[in-house]
Length: 321
Image (tube, rainbow, N blue to C red; front, side, top):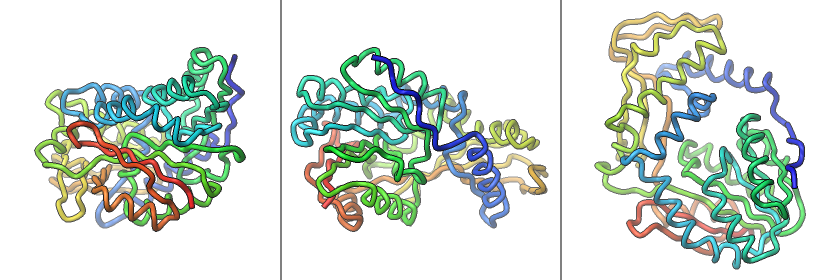
């Protein structure tokens, strides 16, 4: 079976406007920032895939271990007819769920949602070929803005994996979970992957690897802005910084100016002092009780919480009430 034509709710013009708005707001702030979603052009996606294979980067391996063990239980508990994946990318780990549902029976439709047309075109074609009995409906959209575009009806399971929810600041996270609940019916399911609080000596190297791949990934956001908005950043003049914030229990990635710089982008002239930092990502780590409380506040009841054998990463199965 071939995949359905992509349903496109996010055009190139929408992405460009979003980038312009974020760059204008973030680089005009007292503490400069950029959101992490702009890492992911084609090169950024390649670099992130490389990161997931690094020895220091435990989250992908740990989450995969949970899914490999628990996918049969997820299929049996949810009996989902439709599986929706937010921020799907290549949907590589999701195949563990698709395999379990194929054995269990009942799943009819897989709906990956991602901002990238090229990533979805490739992944939906491959999944449709590998799971010929499954209807594959790719949606080009932003999971923070287009949850109302998710297909309705039947028993639905929404998977939001990879710890991506940790990239949202607390108020953004609350808004997202509330919107997610609003997009679901009573009895629908949410499968949520969250990186857990642990020794910073384990966390920090995952964001500051010895080979420097994460540093290149971090600087890639400047290359995206140069290419898309005609800016004149010198990416090599920024050093990669990964710092654990114990008060907020999150890791911050930053870019530190190694010399004074003046950057022109849009109609802005942006000055950087030597040593000044630009925050590019927050990656929150969670405690099980905190995850359950945030879900409960948004209108979900936790049914199961699983971790890998080393307790590094958590996967929560929750139900809309």
